Length: 361
Image (cartoon, rainbow, N blue to C red):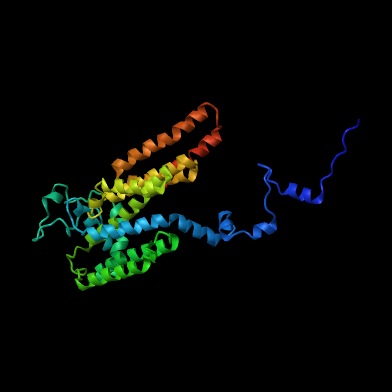
């Protein structure tokens, strides 16, 4: 008996074979089917940039809501003030940066008595401003913004504070319409009305704050407002880190609430110290490093080292050791792979490139 005759596939079968994925032998949709996909499906495949941006916005909408709520909360419960004499240094640095003077020695706007005598705090330190310029440089845009409003600069803070509620309601109503209701009624309009009442109530009791006077302490307000923004950013990145690890939004919210409530961040957000800035940069290092461990993407490792270099500028005594031990944790596995000949020299050197991010930071 001879061999069975060879079966020649029909034209349609040949076309179906060409459309099969060579990796998993799955059939890909034809051009006609691809063009008739739902917009959300096209966005997932990257064929619709506008839908891609919308999906990204939806994914990060909760983080944006958390940022706005944290900013609203911290502005509502805190008042700008100097609590420690260490804060005189940062305030003097910002003042001298604003007027374009040197920032090495104090010129005496803060930390002097009423008759102009330098306090013992600066006398013991030879009048040297010892702290990093990271926080004063970060607060400089706030000073320039307040300068546009003069003695009424507190009005812009009240406007931002009121708008936080409005933006939260609008985002929740758009992204989470099933949750943004109370007994079937949308919450967006009551929240906007509440924000308007809060704004009008503050305007009724509003008083000007001196900005143009020679001894006006508006630098303190600028530093504390910057710390408010950094506090909101810190809360947001803590939430993103928890969500990345736990892969559960509700547990991430609980972890964020527990972490912030059991710390002193709320106090330092109302002070002129750089603790919130240091914590925010450290939180970014942890976030990007965890992303690198989960995904293996060198971009995340590079960003982690950029933040490590930035932390050296903010707090050298913390940033140096964080950078050194992060570098060891990152490089030791690659050194072992190179010694055991799992990778060649060029691959080994390329794998160490993300550590150069510390110099960019």
